[in-house]
Length: 157
Image 1 (cartoon, rainbow, N blue to C red):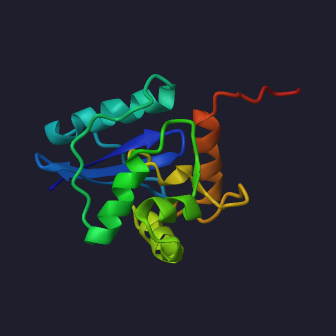
Image 2 (image 1 turned 45 degrees about the horizontal axis):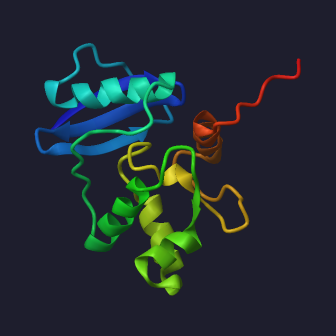
């Protein structure tokens, strides 16, 4: 399994995968050494993430290979369908799965998403519009949603 560490506007980011696809993308809460030579199997992922952060990419075109239960994978597939700049509630996600009672299981699967940003779990919010739990920290979730928003807040000062 190949891995690399890149720097992003939200911190050091670790990417893991191989010729079968990307297994994980995670933001780290510590300073790490940036990888000098990116493994070939991860090059497209690094390029596409950098394009996303620059504002030049809205849709990722990568082979993904996340590890998880069949239910988790079903939730993650639904997450991939949430358009750039849009949000959905955990309840609406549960409804799409056909079981409103599965809201806790959906939230749990969302929290276990191993492929940060590319499987856009940051686009899932509370039914009341609140930013609820995010493994990378709510400050990162807010940054990502603002980054994707068509309405950019200008500084008043």
